[in-house]
Image (cartoon, rainbow, N blue to C red):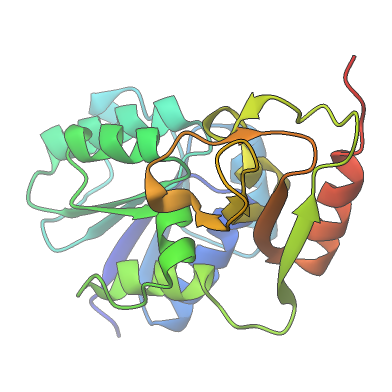
Length: 233
């Protein structure tokens, strides 16, 4: 029996993929959630070791029987809650390896300050095609999944249409992850006519006519293209 243990905090569409891969990699997996909907979803997907608790309560977290050799993967869908959880876990289990998933540069900075040993930034990882920046099996597995060459995934150029509600919205203020896609880069015509990766450090604004390069499943990309045709109110 495997002696590799991982605690996955948060369960949604994205973390469900990670959970499956951790099991395939022979980790003994426990899923920890703080809401009934996620709890029911994990049970429905066939997981047995699912714990429902208040992650803001340190006394509840102490009951998880976490050891210093365990991996703690923070994937709460709420960025603020993810940072708070990371900080709590670092204070309670400083010897354990804490891995946190981030969907923005701002969140990455906060997670590092909160004590995460490794922060997997979906934008930075996807844009630069980094496969082996971490010598940790779980974090590498996270990256491999995000960069999977599965045939159902695609890279697509999406033009922001006329009258789209996206017009004049800053990239950091829009949650692409909510629509199950990753923004790799774009042609931000306000700054240049050349393609730029999101990791350049520039503050990008979305404008009509800009071209976004996104990664996602074909169905999700199709839905997103239709969604952004919604006009400004």
